[in-house]
Length: 174
Image (cartoon, rainbow, N blue to C red; front, side, top):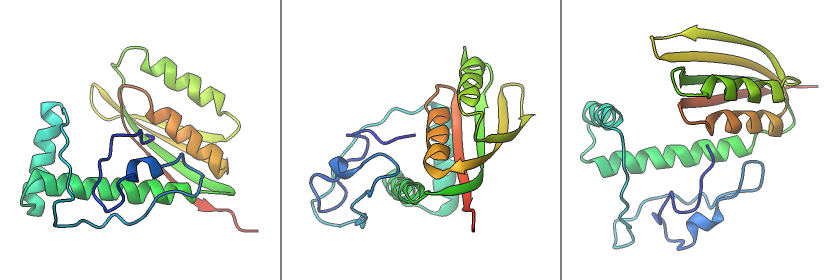
Protein backbone atom coordinates (compact mmCIF):
# COMPACT_ATOMS: atom_id res chain seq x y z
CA UNK A 1 0.00 0.00 0.00
CA UNK A 2 2.99 2.23 -0.09
CA UNK A 3 3.06 5.33 -2.23
CA UNK A 4 5.52 5.36 -5.08
CA UNK A 5 6.83 8.54 -6.67
CA UNK A 6 4.57 9.80 -9.41
CA UNK A 7 1.34 8.33 -8.06
CA UNK A 8 0.38 11.65 -6.57
CA UNK A 9 0.99 14.70 -8.70
CA UNK A 10 1.46 18.25 -7.55
CA UNK A 11 -1.76 19.56 -5.96
CA UNK A 12 -0.15 22.00 -3.56
CA UNK A 13 2.44 24.72 -3.81
CA UNK A 14 5.39 22.40 -3.19
CA UNK A 15 6.74 21.28 -6.60
CA UNK A 16 8.63 18.40 -4.98
CA UNK A 17 5.64 17.12 -2.99
CA UNK A 18 5.86 13.54 -4.27
CA UNK A 19 9.53 13.43 -3.22
CA UNK A 20 8.63 14.34 0.38
CA UNK A 21 6.77 11.06 0.89
CA UNK A 22 8.75 8.59 2.98
CA UNK A 23 8.02 5.08 4.20
CA UNK A 24 5.76 4.50 7.20
CA UNK A 25 7.43 5.11 10.51
CA UNK A 26 9.50 8.11 9.51
CA UNK A 27 8.62 11.73 10.08
CA UNK A 28 6.66 12.25 6.92
CA UNK A 29 4.71 14.46 4.71
CA UNK A 30 4.29 18.06 4.01
CA UNK A 31 0.74 18.05 5.33
CA UNK A 32 -0.32 21.10 3.30
CA UNK A 33 -2.75 19.28 1.01
CA UNK A 34 -5.08 22.21 0.55
CA UNK A 35 -6.28 22.70 -2.97
CA UNK A 36 -5.66 25.87 -4.92
CA UNK A 37 -7.87 27.26 -7.62
CA UNK A 38 -5.06 28.76 -9.71
CA UNK A 39 -3.05 27.24 -12.55
CA UNK A 40 -1.20 25.01 -10.09
CA UNK A 41 -3.15 21.86 -11.05
CA UNK A 42 -1.57 18.95 -12.91
CA UNK A 43 -3.40 16.50 -15.12
CA UNK A 44 -2.95 12.77 -14.68
CA UNK A 45 -4.29 9.76 -16.52
CA UNK A 46 -5.37 6.57 -14.77
CA UNK A 47 -6.71 3.23 -15.91
CA UNK A 48 -9.45 1.56 -13.89
CA UNK A 49 -11.53 -1.57 -14.32
CA UNK A 50 -15.05 -0.69 -15.45
CA UNK A 51 -16.71 -2.11 -12.34
CA UNK A 52 -14.48 0.01 -10.08
CA UNK A 53 -15.17 3.17 -12.09
CA UNK A 54 -18.91 2.43 -12.10
CA UNK A 55 -18.92 2.05 -8.30
CA UNK A 56 -16.87 5.26 -7.94
CA UNK A 57 -19.31 7.14 -10.19
CA UNK A 58 -22.26 5.90 -8.09
CA UNK A 59 -20.63 7.25 -4.94
CA UNK A 60 -19.81 10.56 -6.62
CA UNK A 61 -23.41 10.91 -7.73
CA UNK A 62 -24.80 9.96 -4.31
CA UNK A 63 -22.50 12.41 -2.52
CA UNK A 64 -23.16 15.20 -5.00
CA UNK A 65 -19.67 15.70 -6.44
CA UNK A 66 -19.54 18.00 -9.45
CA UNK A 67 -16.91 15.90 -11.24
CA UNK A 68 -14.71 12.82 -11.06
CA UNK A 69 -11.75 15.12 -10.49
CA UNK A 70 -13.31 16.41 -7.26
CA UNK A 71 -13.91 12.85 -6.09
CA UNK A 72 -10.38 11.77 -6.96
CA UNK A 73 -8.89 14.80 -5.16
CA UNK A 74 -11.00 13.95 -2.10
CA UNK A 75 -9.89 10.29 -2.26
CA UNK A 76 -6.22 11.31 -2.52
CA UNK A 77 -6.57 13.68 0.47
CA UNK A 78 -8.16 10.84 2.45
CA UNK A 79 -5.34 8.49 1.43
CA UNK A 80 -2.71 11.03 2.50
CA UNK A 81 -4.45 11.49 5.86
CA UNK A 82 -4.56 7.72 6.38
CA UNK A 83 -0.88 7.43 5.39
CA UNK A 84 0.04 10.10 7.93
CA UNK A 85 -2.07 8.43 10.62
CA UNK A 86 -0.35 5.11 9.89
CA UNK A 87 3.06 6.72 10.30
CA UNK A 88 2.19 7.51 13.91
CA UNK A 89 1.63 3.85 14.87
CA UNK A 90 4.55 3.27 17.21
CA UNK A 91 5.31 1.26 20.33
CA UNK A 92 3.45 -1.74 21.67
CA UNK A 93 0.00 -2.00 20.08
CA UNK A 94 -3.03 -4.28 20.00
CA UNK A 95 -5.03 -4.25 16.82
CA UNK A 96 -6.94 -5.79 13.99
CA UNK A 97 -6.20 -6.10 10.30
CA UNK A 98 -9.20 -6.50 8.01
CA UNK A 99 -8.52 -7.77 4.53
CA UNK A 100 -10.76 -8.43 1.53
CA UNK A 101 -9.37 -10.47 -1.34
CA UNK A 102 -10.24 -12.54 -4.40
CA UNK A 103 -9.58 -16.14 -3.44
CA UNK A 104 -9.59 -17.15 -7.12
CA UNK A 105 -6.49 -15.03 -7.79
CA UNK A 106 -3.74 -17.43 -8.81
CA UNK A 107 -1.24 -18.26 -6.02
CA UNK A 108 -2.74 -15.59 -3.72
CA UNK A 109 -3.78 -17.91 -0.89
CA UNK A 110 -0.31 -19.48 -0.73
CA UNK A 111 1.35 -16.05 -0.75
CA UNK A 112 -0.92 -14.72 2.01
CA UNK A 113 -0.29 -17.82 4.15
CA UNK A 114 3.47 -17.37 3.67
CA UNK A 115 3.22 -13.77 4.90
CA UNK A 116 1.07 -14.74 7.87
CA UNK A 117 3.55 -17.48 8.83
CA UNK A 118 6.41 -14.97 8.56
CA UNK A 119 4.59 -12.78 11.13
CA UNK A 120 3.35 -15.61 13.38
CA UNK A 121 4.88 -13.92 16.43
CA UNK A 122 2.47 -10.95 16.23
CA UNK A 123 -0.63 -12.72 14.87
CA UNK A 124 -2.79 -13.91 17.76
CA UNK A 125 -5.84 -15.18 15.86
CA UNK A 126 -7.57 -14.94 12.52
CA UNK A 127 -11.09 -15.38 11.21
CA UNK A 128 -11.91 -16.20 7.62
CA UNK A 129 -15.30 -15.63 6.00
CA UNK A 130 -16.52 -16.39 2.47
CA UNK A 131 -18.38 -13.25 1.39
CA UNK A 132 -19.22 -14.45 -2.14
CA UNK A 133 -18.07 -17.26 -4.40
CA UNK A 134 -14.97 -15.18 -5.26
CA UNK A 135 -14.38 -12.79 -2.35
CA UNK A 136 -13.18 -13.51 1.16
CA UNK A 137 -12.92 -11.40 4.29
CA UNK A 138 -10.16 -12.12 6.76
CA UNK A 139 -9.86 -10.53 10.18
CA UNK A 140 -6.46 -10.87 11.88
CA UNK A 141 -5.90 -9.99 15.53
CA UNK A 142 -2.39 -8.68 16.12
CA UNK A 143 -0.24 -7.64 19.08
CA UNK A 144 3.27 -6.22 18.94
CA UNK A 145 5.42 -3.30 17.94
CA UNK A 146 3.56 -0.82 15.73
CA UNK A 147 6.25 -0.87 13.05
CA UNK A 148 5.91 -4.63 12.71
CA UNK A 149 2.09 -4.41 12.55
CA UNK A 150 2.39 -1.83 9.75
CA UNK A 151 4.92 -3.99 7.91
CA UNK A 152 2.51 -6.94 8.01
CA UNK A 153 -0.39 -4.82 6.73
CA UNK A 154 1.73 -3.43 3.89
CA UNK A 155 3.02 -6.85 2.90
CA UNK A 156 -0.53 -8.22 2.74
CA UNK A 157 -1.71 -5.25 0.65
CA UNK A 158 1.10 -5.63 -1.88
CA UNK A 159 -0.37 -8.81 -3.38
CA UNK A 160 -2.38 -8.80 -6.59
CA UNK A 161 -5.94 -9.84 -5.80
CA UNK A 162 -6.05 -8.15 -2.40
CA UNK A 163 -8.79 -5.52 -2.63
CA UNK A 164 -8.28 -3.80 0.69
CA UNK A 165 -6.32 -4.00 3.92
CA UNK A 166 -7.04 -1.83 6.94
CA UNK A 167 -5.03 -1.77 10.14
CA UNK A 168 -6.66 -0.40 13.26
CA UNK A 169 -4.67 -0.28 16.50
CA UNK A 170 -4.73 1.00 20.04
CA UNK A 171 -1.74 1.69 22.25
CA UNK A 172 -1.02 -0.63 25.15
CA UNK A 173 -0.98 1.49 28.27
CA UNK A 174 1.42 0.70 31.09
